[in-house]
Image (cartoon, rainbow, N blue to C red; front, side):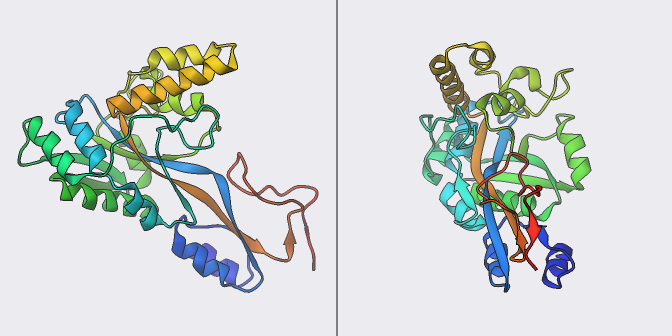
Length: 287
């Protein structure tokens, strides 16, 4: 809100936007304003900790996946600013594949899987979650969807720094994490799905699901000299992770920026690896 107000009053010339449809629609209406919707997107994923009951049962994790309505989630965040997520690697990354096991939205299938796993009356799972409004609203929408399938998601809301501390202490059954990385499949697979990255290990990063389904492929792809074989290894890794339901991808939020028309960046903005438009020696004010 402070950024938006400063931008509207002319105090600042460029702002990073809130990643939702209403922000884009509101800022586009401001006179003399350019709005950019940029890649790469930030991937929102729900990691399911396989070591914690009832999520240690594949059928329960499959039930969570079937209870997730991605079309609803994309509509919730906004069709102009959001892409649906299919694989656990974001679309547009080198090595991404859409040829992975998918779990269509079906409350009936979710309930049937829970009953088969021995939970005919449903299950309760918990999540430690940040108080940041953009991420929290997403988790609350997920909570509502899961509730329809008799999956009770209890959310413990904490300050953002505490959230990062506690999920790295392996305290959360369900972890919602949103991230953009260098756009090569290895980066995402290594940090989020290789067993070396499991919390509390000396090599820990962000493998909150304790996934180890594709360690061999992830490791082999790093040093594979044949580009075609490397792509095959990355594709196989994504397929194995999806089959194991280590995590449920939700959507990708694109980067949103706005600046005054009097600021000429000197180039057409499509995307940026540092997630923001670059100010270069070619950038200038036109008046």
